[in-house]
Figure 1 (spheres, rainbow, N blue to C red):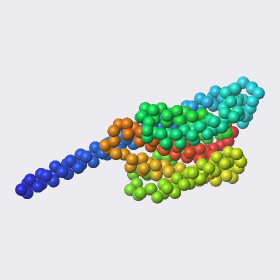
Figure 2 (cartoon, helix red, strand yellow; figure 1 turned 30 degrees about the vertical axis):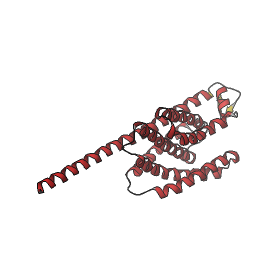
Figure 3 (tube, helix red, strand yellow; figure 1 turned 45 degrees about the horizontal axis):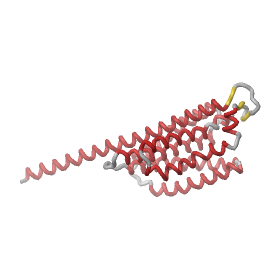
Figure 4 (cartoon, rainbow, N blue to C red; figure 1 turned 90 degrees about the vertical axis):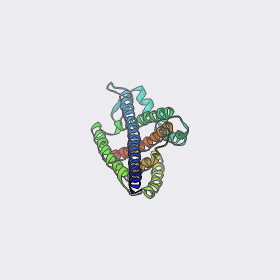
Length: 257
């Protein structure tokens, strides 16, 4: 009887260890998918921003000059016509659309929508090349990548519950969104500075919080479609944290043309 009990306990322990290993492997695969989607989104944004800027400026003298650069017809349309407001606000509208509809979309449709959003964000961000030097944009990007990696790793590994901090940060997020939209029209450098400082603090915290939240969204028994939609939604959250952290740091430390 004692031998039987030892065997039963040993089998149960072995099954528990195997189950935990399967969950860990599934979680790593899920998080890797999230980061891969995010990286692809950032690549699309970068390519769209650089491509749009190259199409918008010309080395040949033209009648329209912005920040000391000659604009092509495409550049005039993108940066000086009323279309600039559509380009500026379209990504924000797309974020609300994805957040509301992604749960009901197919995984393929969700991926396509996310990548389209990343492209629109690239068009919107292309104007930073008119304002900041290429060297400072590159430098701030790598600083952002290093900070984001460290913060996301903390959120993934910490045992501390970040839920309380996340609620406070989300409230701050809505505050800086409203302040940023208002500042588009009033153009206050002081408001921009305060928004940038708060943006660095808020999106640094959100990076850790969102990583922990995305990790806790994992459920081993989800079907492939549900798992993919969760990964896309997680990638969208981390992508937004990265982009906003980058633009906040660029506003503070970028060298202007």
